[in-house]
Amino acid sequence: MMDFLSNVWVKRTVAVFNIMYVGIVVMLTYATFLYTLEINESSEKAFYAIYIVARIVFMLLMLFSRDQVVTGISSLVLLTSVFCLLLFNMGNWLLIIPPFIVGLVVFFACGLGDTTKVVMGTIFLLMYVLGVVAYIVMNMLMTGNSTETLIDINLEPGTEVYDLYKSSAEKINVMTNYENTVSPNGKYRFYIADVQNSFKGSVNIYVVPYGEDKDLKFFKLRQKGIKKTISSQGKRGYVPDVGWLDDTHIFYRLVDGGEEHVSEVNDAIMPDKQYLGFLGLS
Image (cartoon, rainbow, N blue to C red; front, side, top):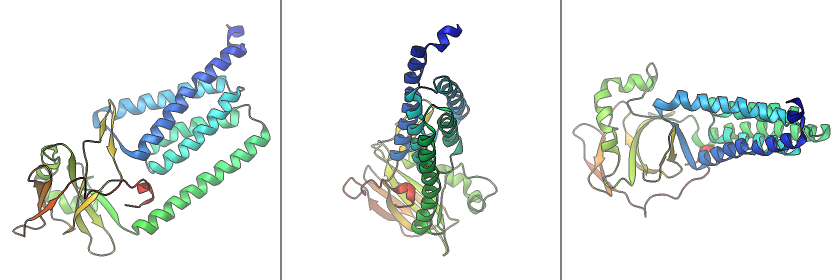
């Protein structure tokens, strides 16, 4: 058995097999660049359990084949991909930390020369530190002290936003359910957001593509970077009346007894996709 495990071709085969894990992380990174990843509530534990177990298994396999050049290159690709994963999913540490640990441990354990490790280690250190600083600065410049919170039945108890809308729970449930938010043709979806800023704040209504979302077993990929502002004049604490009249027209009323507005929604007026939304651009 020891002779089999020490065979160089076995290690080379394992090293090539490990590329599959790197490929999965790269695809996940690319997917979260184009889409917003939403783990299905009923599948959260299963998804993260598989995600973490896969990290442990592949880290052990990479350590087994650490002397192979392919494994060293895999660690470099992995750390580069995780850096992008960090920028696209800032705050989702359960998604970021497992592949980061794999990349970091394998990088230090692999057979790359000391000079290569020093040079690449310095590059990665600067990339992560400066990249995160640049991310924070860009978001501060683009969004200032403005914070948007999605208004739906999953508002977190104990927060300021929850306290503002807890008396409207029944209305929120009606306004934000699937049947009301998705257009009759299934092409668009609207959502309502509470905006906190240095002024009075507001309640905004946005329309986003819906038919372009992808539903997978454990998670959904929501199209992002395409968002049409229908209204930004709502008053904080009040949930507007909003709904679809037909496939391309949405109505809304910002206050009780207020004027009813109608906006047209079609491909011609929807904005182009904003690929740098993760930097606070919209």
